[in-house]
Length: 259
Image (cartoon, rainbow, N blue to C red; front, side, top):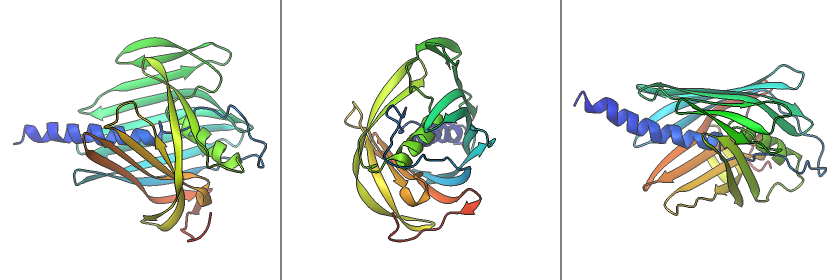
């Protein structure tokens, strides 16, 4: 039993860590059409904690966005389950409402000791990507982002739109290729969270595999901070739920009826 326990933790950890990719992959890849519908959005620094649950096991994820006050940002995210953990960081700039990616690094720890990197060079038509200890040159088009910085692009996009209830295209440089996804607006819902009930916009990420489902919810009253994700694969759901956060140094507070 002692030998099987770490392997079981590894399997559960993989599913839980995959679900956390919804924090970073189920997002817009660009603001291809910078919206003039609303005043320019501003990304405020924030800290957030999420509780991830799978097969009765939980892990706390910690995410933080920092800014240098001059358009530069650093976004970090990480967590650990028993002997399985990860840490990731993205560095980018914001020009008006457009995220300009710099670099992304993912480092697995413990039983999943994997590393991924994505590096963008201004003016270049390729992106350098490290995957399974091999470097790849991926084609770059305007708006292509990495796993993490493109979530902040999504938030900027939603904040700047007069009507954010629209489907969103997704483009991510990841691994050996550039991936395109579609986020479909499902509807407005009120979610029960550890912080209280909160109004949220529900999006579904389309998959080619009908046995996989991915959903994500964003809270307009909290600058479209991600509140919840649910990923289902092989009939097993993995949920990520916001448990605590502050934006601009102010704790987020649920305000029923706000939108």
